[in-house]
Length: 288
Ligand code: UTP
Image (cartoon, rainbow, N blue to C red; front, side, top):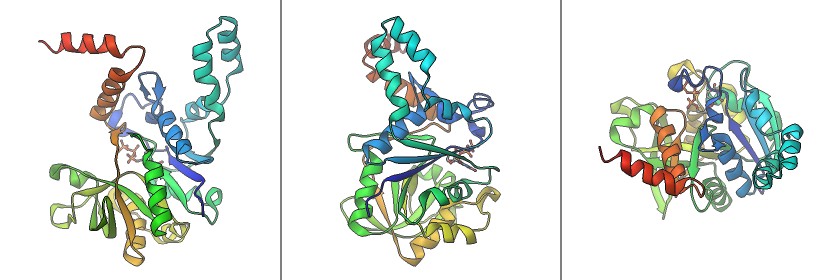
């Protein structure tokens, strides 16, 4: 079955980047001139996704406004003949069919995914974490969809993380199948050192079969007293196996301060309008 639906959870509290996220969703953080979540929606669209559900909550209406039309702004730009910028903003509202649902309480990523049940129905679907921007030639979401089509099993995007950091992520039990494909038969969220299975962790993307919802119904709060998606995927991995794809792409974690700064600096260096000037500025600053 062709995967055409994606869910973007964006209802987290963003406590690691307070006070910036007190009133502004972290998913709207501008990476030079484009909010993080627009990169994510564009990745989904380039991967063949036509319908996207964004999970929001109170205080995230800015995300809905961003993917809506703004006729007043469009008219003003048209009158001022600012066609280039008009052409950049007008298509945002028609990138895909974008829907929104509110997670009424912030009870964890697994709980957020449960809110997508009626949107997803009985189809496999992609999940793109709202605070993970991944830059790559072939969209990472598409790399995962291809793995789903090849193996017919749920898929997680994975990368090795430094040993000192594995306790902040999830750790995967893996066996290489071929190239960058691994069979994953177990996983653990935020492991203590004695529970680490490998340094491979799930980073930002997965493709899930609809049976994940039944598993989530049975999933009790785990690490941080939140309903963890990893705990539900662990059941799926133990039961049927999941595929881990060591994806090709560079990931920026917009949920932490250093991740935001790295994303902004690297995108600014590549930016067609300011890249050259920014490079000169940065090299003069770094002489100190
Ligand atoms: P994170 O754990 O990185 O987000 O969740 P967070 O909870 O906002 O982080 P901190 O620790 O408070 O800084 C990964 C993704 O899942 C979403 C987040 O918005 C983020 O995109 N999420 C998380 C939800 O939608 N609902 C939740 O209850 C938790």
